[in-house]
Amino acid sequence: MEIWINPACSKCRSALTLLDAEGADYTVRRYLEDVPSEDEIREVLDRLGLEPWDITRTQEAVAKELGVKDWARDEASRDRWVKALAEHPKLIQRPIITAQDGTAVVGRTDEAVQDALSRKS
Image (tube, rainbow, N blue to C red):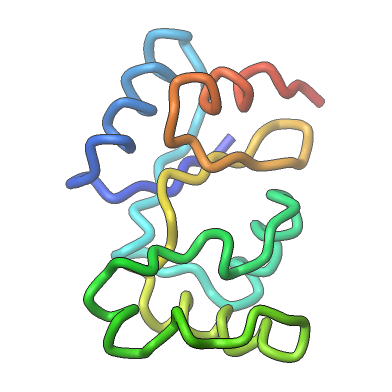
């Protein structure tokens, strides 16, 4: 299990606290420092069952600068979104937890973190 976090994020800290309380075995990835590649982002999206616009923080200043709210949300535009997430990791919704069964969740609630913990291979 891996969790992508921003240490300044309260949702990330809450998720880590819950994982620790459950005795979970996990690896922390500070994705603002250890930036995921486009391929890693695509893999996580596949595991999440989501599209890149589903995990984009559209209220971030850089999102507004890029104008992502006006970008098309279709297959032809998918690579543009993935590239933006790789170039501007602050846009990636957090925390993202990759579960043992090959899936992933966006762990913004205690319920989502518990869901990730329950997904055994």
